[in-house]
Amino acid sequence: MAKYSVRYTSRGRWIWTITVILTIINLISIMAGYVILGGDAYTGEEKENKYFVNSHGKYTEVTRAQWIYSYIHCLLFFVNVPAVPIIYFWLRAKGDISQRIDRLGW
Image (tube, rainbow, N blue to C red; front, side, top):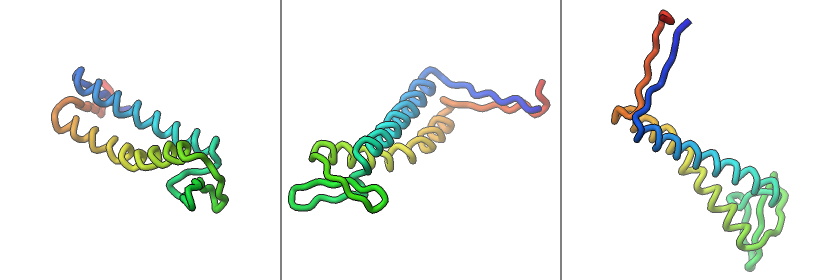
């Protein structure tokens, strides 16, 4: 059985931890907002100064602040998700993260 270990520099651990924590917080915020508001603003719409979130074709009216909250978190999702592998490979290239696989398990 192969052993697998990851080594971080203090800088690499700090950057990686912050990246992962922020991505998880944003994902939880999106899911909580989706459940509480009844949909998301990214697929919702604004008509005549009324704001709607959408979930599977069902529109629910929300306040402007709720709509902006949902919209910002949905947009940040498209930044956070690609940022995780980009930052990981950047840290690998800089030597802040290194991996070791011992195929023999010794």
